Length: 231
Image (tube, rainbow, N blue to C red; front, side, top):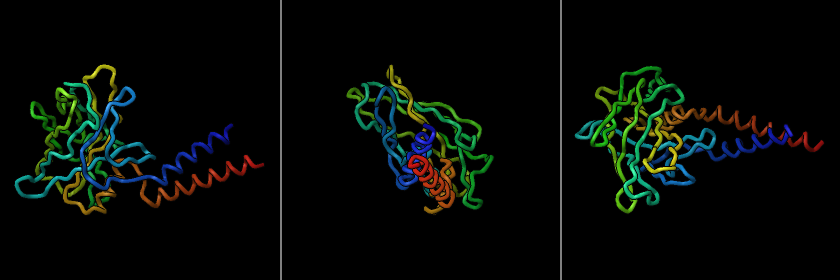
């Protein structure tokens, strides 16, 4: 029985290692009601750690310096007419609400003074390393269609880097539970390769070399359990 359990766990994690993916493109946070809860349909998914990652970009300089309204939020299928969709922010793997990846050190900084203001028109919150919060995104129309954008503004003086927070969605609909948390990660002036490294740090995904060792160990574990069963 123990060998079967170990073998099953190993096969599951091996499959995760073979399909693990990182955020590669931008897009809205797409969701739907499914199985009595909100299910996030968009973004890259790390099967090993079950964190979806949705990308955004803060422009550098010009009229829209440090400002974006992407990603937006869109119901993949119609939800209840007039349903209100809100959000909650959660501390990430590093214990921060707003995580900052510094490309000069290649790590998440333990503390920082930066913040992102999330503005939904009738209210707003400042998300910082120490503070999260809750807020609204908006309300579905009479046909249950939902596609709205909030405004995100990065605080002034921020250095080049990646800025991200862990968010979940909730709804006013009775009997529909919150979504699993997902990452919204913004690129501010980073090269794409550095930004991919940042997403690994936000989600807790190991470096490729470490991931190879983990997956290699799991393949060995799987082979060991097969040998035990054949005796």
